[in-house]
Image (cartoon, rainbow, N blue to C red; front, side, top):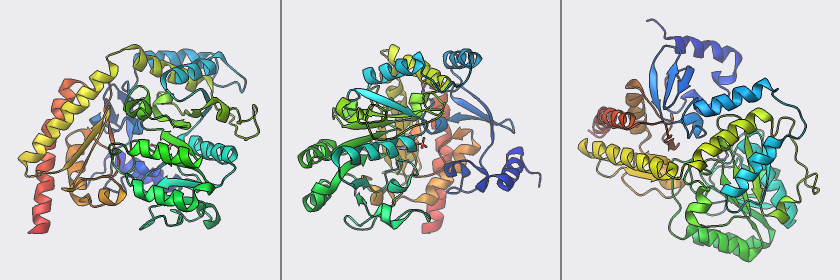
Length: 438
Ligand SMILES: *Cc1c(COP(=O)(O)O)cnc(C)c1O
């Protein structure tokens, strides 16, 4: 059998790069098969090296909210590149992006740019520990904050287990300061604070969880987290690397009206270039070097190319007052269409979640509100659905436990085509389920 270009490329990549990829989520491990190797992208579409074109709902895992290769973003990058790609000295662009961020994100008074979401959350934890002079951190099972040691901790079964590292190479001594709790469970969080509140530096949370599939906070939950942290003098860190500029212009904190102490941003803030940031209250941020003594640095941080892509993207999303209403409406229309197709194939109670320009569906007939309930999903049904969509030119994240992203470039025709393709995909998933049950 003739191999596709992508299959050949993947085989070769595996000789030189671990698993053939520079980030494991791209590898199709969860769903099986070969990831298409991408040659180019434009608007709502990506095109692979075999010439297949896909309507893309991954959007580089979130950043591409204005669509791929947006002419204004590309022009800005090209012009900036001609002036040099990095100087390692201050530029006006850094202040410009910082001003934009403080204007758009309600709780951020000062902000430091870094290169990845991992760096942002790692630095935010160091800052929170320095500010509170405490060492413990509370994180949520199923929330992902990047791959640094303190937060690479899986769900412990049962209440508040001490963190068990998710990866070899992470010392127990580090994860022992990480306490894991269940999403949307106020009693558990209260109990953890009642026992060791005086030792807890911070709670870090995805205010809308997007890394166990899309899971929304229940009514009043984030306010509860805000109240408990404030009561015990712990900081509240919102990891809005995914949700920032995604669920609303001001992120989840604007959507839900909750003010965290520190916010981590990433993905959209760089418009497709490697940028992330952490920011928050002035008195906290002024502890960061060189204003203060909490060390954190970066050779390429705030580099002019990345700042330029971020500025161009944030301008596009903030200057059009209809941007979020329109993109949310498109997301709603797509989800309604998918749900109708699912019902036609006998999936009466799949869990569809959406907020702003994010959506997700769980192949589960029970409500999904935390990591354990997310894991009840029928992964095989998802995998069948995923491959049937891919074969029809619809590119979704290759895992049941990832969110999907709408962009401003997706047209009504794209949405119609996606809904139409889903009919076939739900049919194949339904056949698989009845085969397994029968
Ligand atoms: C993607 C993501 C990160 C990690 O960002 P990287 O740039 O991949 O290091 C952290 N937190 C959340 C919520 C994310 O979605």
